[in-house]
Length: 121
Image (cartoon, rainbow, N blue to C red; front, side, top):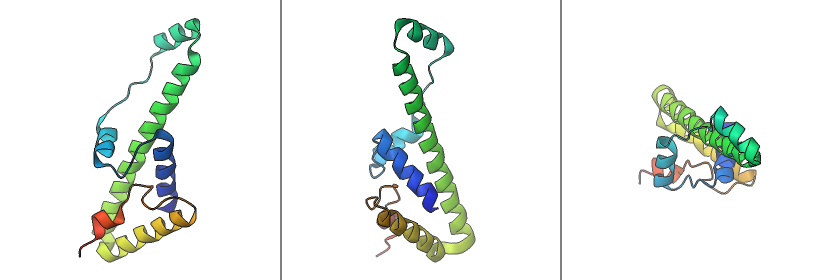
């Protein structure tokens, strides 16, 4: 869980996606980016803008990776809740969050927002 959350946090920072902003996460999860096609790449290369196309492709790949990792984490959380219960799942998630903070990430950089999801009082 720690490695997954660290990768999510790094991708979010690289893409300037605020995972604490519900609207930003919703937009990330819904919006599909298209990859420039072969014809556009050839046209861009001929026009000398290959670097732009390449950076757009990298950006699109990173967005897709971030979306996939968030979906994977949501599935892991759901499975853990079903199999291990609330207390064990919260403990694992809190430990992963604490480890990220010790590595220098700001609290919530991975978008977990433990207080939002697990504060019952």
